[in-house]
Amino acid sequence: MSNPNNQVSPEITGLNTRPRILAVSNQKGGVGKTTTTVNLATAMAAVNKRVLVIDMDPQGNASTSLGIDHKHRNTNIYHVLTGDASLDSAITPTAIPNLSVITSGVDLAAAEIELIDLPNRQARLKEALINQGSGWDFILIDCPPSLGLLTLNALVAADAVMVPLQAEFLALEGISHLVRTIERVKKSFNPSLEIQGIVLTMVDKRNNLSEMVESDVRKFFGAKVYTTTIPRNVRISEAPSHGKPVLIYDLQSKGSRAYLDLAGEVLKREQIINENHGVAA
Image (cartoon, rainbow, N blue to C red; front, side, top):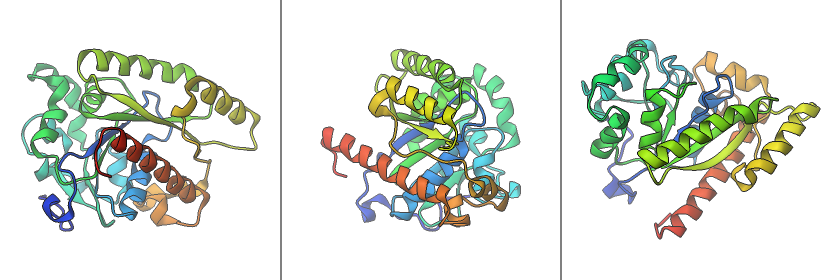
């Protein structure tokens, strides 16, 4: 499918043609990567930011959570990475104004193997975005729960990484692997890559363990950890089965309010980054 119907040229909107690209990544599964990607994107779109989600996970949960049926995923991120389709041709509009998605498909599971034999295998997504990724304020990449070639492509293409971190005992051990990977990517492929922030997910304030983990994470990473935490919330869990972000499914829920607060923090950090680099907000 071509560009979304609600897409307006950057000349009209006054947007920078260069979007800010954030990879949402953690090699550990079940920590809220997809939920964070989808709801952060929705919250940004609600304040008139033009947002593109790229579903880089073969499971395709971000695509499902945004209400995209499998029959509308014929041209997806797999075809972009292999060079069989342009990035623009793979964009699918969602029911949410200002928010579109490049879906995942079952073929993506084979991409880790197929990319090995392609030139610039670690930079396929970056090249696609350079050629055709204009017209957006933000591009959010939902990474798979691994540190293979798909995640590497996301990190090479990204300006910064957002790390969802479940408030559990082994959280710090898991994130240490990702931090080392980010440092290797910076050294070899993407010198400007940085951690935009770490968001604690599935936090239960009634649980002493959650509080202990949160305290340890904040001591270790300091200001990189967002003030906002995402609570355990049944509405967050229910929303994907309805093909909706929780912000659409139940705006009044604690989960929705938390993601709205998180979006405010992320946008504030982005504004500071822009000001430091002399870029208009």
